[in-house]
Length: 240
Ligand SMILES: [Zn+2]
Image 1 (tube, rainbow, N blue to C red):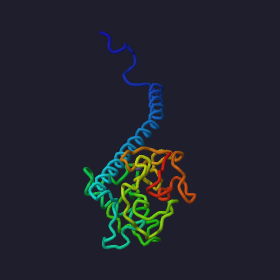
Image 2: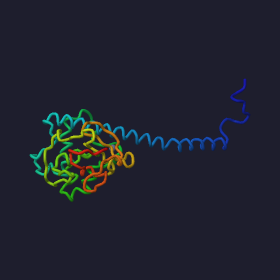
Image 3: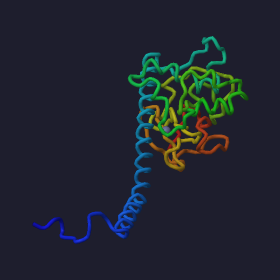
Image 4: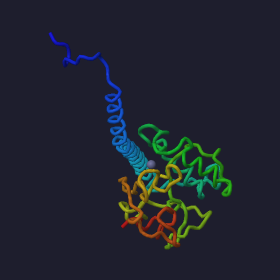
């Protein structure tokens, strides 16, 4: 009976065969790596949009339970609690946490963020200039809650610093076009997902990737990355 394919040399590979196999593996890796990295980014984006959807859902519950009012708590022990940047980094997340149905801490972190969540990095880098430190952050987050939801803004979207105000859901005229929360993972507006896009959840609860080119021009000459300066404050729309 013949053994194998009848080679008359010993078992094993020749050097040439080995090199060919190594070459093929190298080519396969070169082909697969970008695909894998793309798949990883896509998975991260999917989780991020799911987080944003959850936070949007929690906000819908909150306004339902608070006579259609957005979070605002000027009687907190810190009188500046509702003034930017605290309102964006503390108040909203504290208010929503009891309403989250799953993963009450993980939902605040985008999987593409670094080990230091964005809000902590921001507070360390820019906070002290505004009397705000990372030590105050109770719920580290990759997401941002724009100031017009709790500050007074004029028709052009110009905010009046240190003038907080409780706004109503009924003031939002375009719920499907009004940004509610955005991802800033790794310090980039829209998060570290796709270039020149925002990962956004809107007031109506739907989350999607929005291209900068689809963002309506913010007031005061700001560019699309500035989500606080949208024209007409919470009454306006942010996308075409
Ligand atoms: Zn993200």
